[in-house]
Image (cartoon, rainbow, N blue to C red; front, side, top):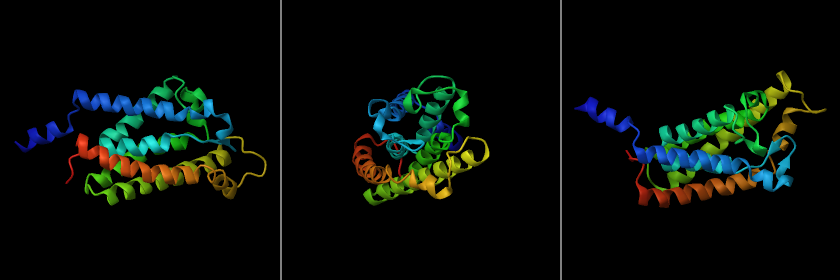
Length: 198
């Protein structure tokens, strides 16, 4: 009986696939806000809404399905669909210095979902969102720095400090949106009840 229950718990339902598709689409939309507002590109880092949607995916869908939604988004982009920032795509994007942020969205969704799967309080949702946001910045910025130093053509005078200075403009936006994501997801989760809280 335990085996059957465990199998059922991990099996994706039709509604789960729909939610995963929805959040993959939201990631695509969030990536390309800079195409409509081009002045939101600072240094080598475009300002997007992907962190917000990746956090929401984890908080609303849970660790496994949230991470899967972000993985689907990444795979669609690597397959050639123009779903990355500035309507770019293709396997060559894996060499882009900012590709680490795309990889980090999978971790962001997974960690955010993992935290709220253990506690369903509003505070835990906000904490999960902020922890996930920090992971996004740490992983993505360090990937970008090492990419510029190892295989990409770094701008003149590029330093580790400069890499983090590029992250300052989107910082307030991402902090505020992370907190909002936590509050919004907590309210929505009470209605949808997608995540079974332990």
